[in-house]
Image (cartoon, rainbow, N blue to C red; front, top):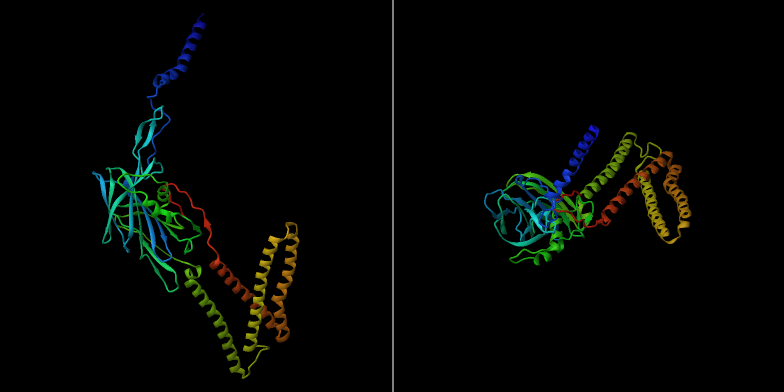
Amino acid sequence: MKMAKKFSVILISFLILLFTPLISFAQEEPASSGVARPDIYPIPPSEPGFLGQDHSYSVTFRGNGEAVIALKVILNNKAESPLKEISLRVPLVEPREISVYQVIREPSCIRYLTDGSCAESQEPDYYGYYWSKTKYQKAQSEFSGDSLKITLPQAISANKSGSYFVYFRAVGYAKKDIFGSYKFTLESLKVDDSIRNLTVGINTDSDLFLRGAQGKVQYRFQDAATSLKAVGGAAPAESGAIDTFYNQIGYGEITKTASSLAPLESYTVSSSFADSRMKLYAKEISIALGVFLAIVAGVFVAIKLILGKIKAKTGEEKTLPGLNARFVIESLGVSFGSALLVAGYTLFAVWLITYFSRTIGYEFQGGFSIFMVVVSFAIYTLFLFAPGIYLGAKRGIGWGIATVFFTVFWLVILLGIGLLAFFLLRNPVTYPTPMPLSGEVKQY
């Protein structure tokens, strides 16, 4: 009997412990449309805005040296009063066709009711990755001296974040050099506040080449002016085209970053661009060509001096078998002709293989490749060693070996010239336009 009572007490206690949380949960959340859902959480905060502003640039250089610039600014109002007036200093150039737009985001809902309505909202954080519906409103701007004064249509409350972007054109960043390329020095705009992060993306028109770029990325900044004209007036407006444009600001074919800039401190980016790689790298090509010609001239001068010293000591034109200037020039000429034949046959073989690989059937390609390898081996052996064997038999074995050596030397020079020509004449690789998230920074 006692054992039965103890067992009953233990069973009742277990059932009470088991069903008490369920009863409490049912009492806390009855089936009603006026209670907030517990599965909605506040948006996590980003890095504090009091550390400084975030600036992102996208600069597109045109073929005439003009720069099209888009600047995105995210800031936090550190003052105790609403912020409505903003001043930027524009160094080096005088901007034209200035357009300024404030970015306005609606508060984000962090708790929903069961009927779908919002129970609690959170102020938008322009520094973060999360946002709600975005609208844009044209802001008033005035440029005087080197200062751009902006009046925001909606003041940013104290200790709140906000964003705006500036779009303008400018001439003066890029200057044309004697080779036909443009060298530019881009200096960022200055503000009376510290800048936490700064990103500069540099682009060019599709037919231009930018020094340091790995490939061509087609961003749609050229459509920005048309999209901006459609937004204006007294009320904020939505625009999918401007959403894409705003999110791509800061990206480019090459991207530079800086951080922790002091108030009124700027960041400078320098590079060059041209309508051909020949113009873009003309300085380097000239230096390489000058070094090559100097080496060739030095070889000829050294040979001439050696022959002159030998003649002065012995009184003879030729003191060693076959050693005189005529034979040296003959060996260099024959070896250069041999190298040209090797290079010419190589180009012909590449063209022939490419042509037949597209025209003959797959089952014949293996046999054709073997045939080309055998024929090419024989032709390369003939062109490379036949001139050396000929001069060796006629002038001596020493000059035969020298001729083969000079042939290899000319082949290395022609290979370098061919690779350089391929690099200068090839079309740039075009990559698809990425669809970035706001606030991302991407290196190319």
